[in-house]
Image 1 (cartoon, one colour):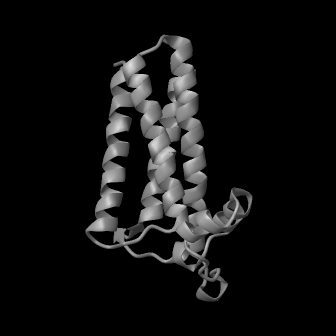
Image 2: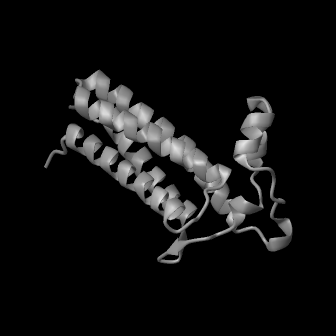
Amino acid sequence: MTINNRKLFLAIFLVCLGLLGFGLVLQHVKHLEPCPLCILQRIAFIAIGITALAAAIHNPKRRGWTVYGSLLAFFSVLGGGVAAWQVYLQHLPPGQVPECGPGLDYMLEAMPLTKILPLIFKGSGECAEVTWTFLELSIAQWALGWFVLFALVGVIAAVRRR
């Protein structure tokens, strides 16, 4: 049984669309404001989704699938790294959790990007807070699972012989 890359990448795009939509429901219906690390994960899902949609529309030959698969894996590893860091923060003992910092909106207005990124990746108390779970997994843990799956698909698409 062969898997059609075009359909697989279209499915990845649709999953990313669903994940982003679910995040917006949690934000606007359940009133769960995303922390800076959550926003970075959303950006990674957007990059993965756009890459997957472009691959599905383009339907390239072998080298093209290598490029798209590599991009998919790259964005997935970046997003997975952010999600893994947030999972780590969520499992710190209460005394070791970093203090809450200024909001991302304020940082973007008041600071240069070179100062914002280290603060975001340091994390804060709000990034360590688990506000929603499903099957006893936090949003960051679910995101990490999706990033790992997308990275595997990307690597397989990049190295698979046609």
